[in-house]
Length: 428
Image (cartoon, rainbow, N blue to C red; front, side):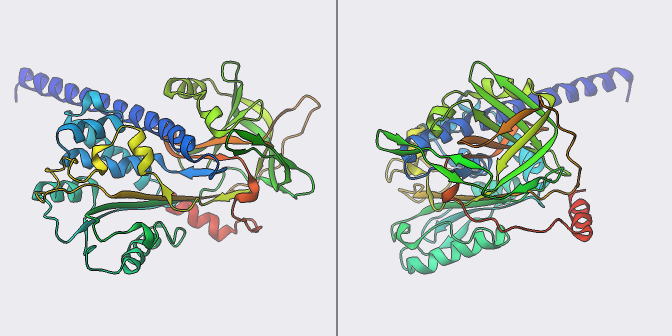
């Protein structure tokens, strides 16, 4: 090959890489926008029912993305708008880059994130060969064929929950109940995720007698608060931190061991509901604040908790975000998924589970305190994100408003040397 041909090939390769890099940037931004809007719209509808929330915007987003392959007409436009890619719905690189993100985030962190994503399709539905092939090759999914019309809903729920239980290493055992399954169902998506990270450094645990958490509870238009005892984890160390006068919130970064995953905690100055807090942020504000964090010596106090919100009903939230025809019999345009008339998505079942405790893989002595030591004390409702730092993608998102309505986290001993070695080996 002559120099001219080599130069041409290199130029074409560079151009292709730039196009793919652009697609990756767009999909990262889209996932962040989706995460924030989903949280806002869901809590607008369910704030009184869910004083605490935890979900995986990335897993939900990844389960909806394959629909772009089979949706047509108005439904495709709505799904693209829901996924925040309406300007790029015809760009084939977008879905390819989502698959790249899945590898970077979910596959690379498979020892911290356990998840399952399943498509259940009625036996009467004839899926197109193209849809099945793309699901298998690009997303690693195989549609599960179910006889919704003639099977007992209890048996179907048991099958779905078994699939989810296996995928999440027994952490999530029920993502759907039989009452939500109907004989007319033709298409259903179920997914769940379990996150169990260990901090880069061990926290100390302080018993309930030392700290009180000021809750926030909303009943209609009435908001009340109560002081409740809470087990706090504390640490004095160098943490990345930023205070924003614009949002009147503090932001703190707590790294996890042997991964690019970090927890970002957003603590408002005053008592706010989840909706009031998330309204302060859009994608740009959030990313800008994260970019402004600087290391400071800080005394951090954060509650020990586990969140496992049951049976999140997110179909209404999807509709509120613009995906209306997708869920409507006779109006959903999913001809690229199936040639069977009237196929529509019945529902999406999602559940995520997180454990936040003091366990870390490195034991450090707390740094010497000073009288002017800065404090970051999570003694009132706060927002938290699990972010993959290479991509800045929000993998999980949560809100703690009332520690009384969380699962109990039993006190555990420090990790043994064997456990530490196993964790580090698996993460490499």
